[in-house]
Image (cartoon, rainbow, N blue to C red):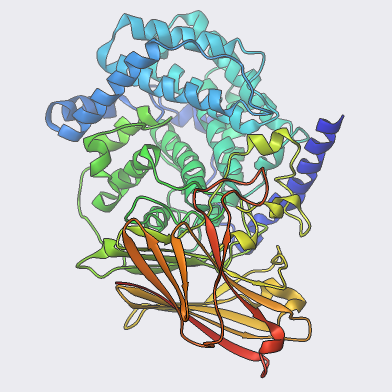
Length: 618
């Protein structure tokens, strides 16, 4: 009974939260001519038709004779296929209420095995594809209580049937298509079921679930034309909700990790529709969507680590490189193509099979440069500053505004990360695994002002490098906006933080200035009111910290960074160790600490203050 209560509470919070997400963005409709008659007239009669086509397969075979990177990647796929043959078949196993790991593993297996089979025609691979399909299609269900699991499993099965169906037993094809209908598409119409908010939401679930249903529908259109047409038409009606989040500049408000998840299934929808029906109906032309690859690259530091705001993990991986290959193929722009990864591919992830299509389609037409200083708008506005052209990897500063109550949002407005000379001096704590929290009934999905979510170090403002007033939480529904950005001359950005504090403060703005390739100036200008008691300036770091008369010296990896208090010389820093973290359920980060400058309101005689801090290297 306790578990049910927790589930229903989380659903209540999500129901309140997700429908409101896209209100800030203008929804731009897609073309939607889909009817049964349209499918009959336009659906490709050739096999395969999902991402891979006979013409593309022919091109892959040609590239395998001439393109070294395609050869390298295909060698990786063959090794992966060999390793899959040694693994046990998948089982219907849940982690808490999720079966997502099983669905993702199935997708990776089918993409790899089916691609290798088409090019090698080895009987043992086809036999294994058949056994894998029989195993998952005989599951009692694909876990409709967590529809992401259904969506990814549906795409996996649809891909396998499309790519190798002509070689598989008819009984397997019938079972697989029946499963796509009964375990995938039909449950997607249970709008009153658990976590079915994705149908109308604007977060990554919308893209993933509709994308998976599109792929499934294209495969079963021959036996269920009305259901297929209805489902594809629904996706084209509802996908604009999540596509609107990319506007205007491509920033994905859920952060770079969830950019990969949500965007991959926008690509699935666009790519499968284009190869099967001849059009993606405007998906790839949605405002900000193609630019989102630039966003991803902008928030990827030279070290390979992200500006990991919202619920993002720390570092980019092979799956990101595979996804960006689609953008490279679509644009012909080499800046999206991760040549280093395809030289020595490892852990390409669940889109490994389609990845061979995307890199084979890539033909470099140009290699454009990312701007060294960049600002993007949207629900989570971000600004990024790099080093000069002679040494762009030397310097990385990224800052953000935003608000907490957006999908996967944190109380991280005003925070920043800073890398200099290959060292990440200022960090974001990033995400932490969900299951341990879910298993104890922690209300992670409660984005209300008093929600339990904000007690976690990774979620609360005290866990980020920002300004806290009266030790209080930020107001979850208030937005910090970027009010000024200067690229030329001395680059800088200003964020209006005032709305986050409510009655605790009259006003506060943060200004970050890239003074040189060795330093950043952080200027906080605030005005207190009668409710203001304490203002706390915070910085998160793993460095060793030594206090000085004017600030602190940070030491890490044999290098040094100076923190100087340029104004208010009577102020000093204190250091709070966060290893171990405050709560047993908090994420543990080795040597994590928070540098604080605490300013009692009674010391601000005029009611106004300008605090200047410089971080500079040697």
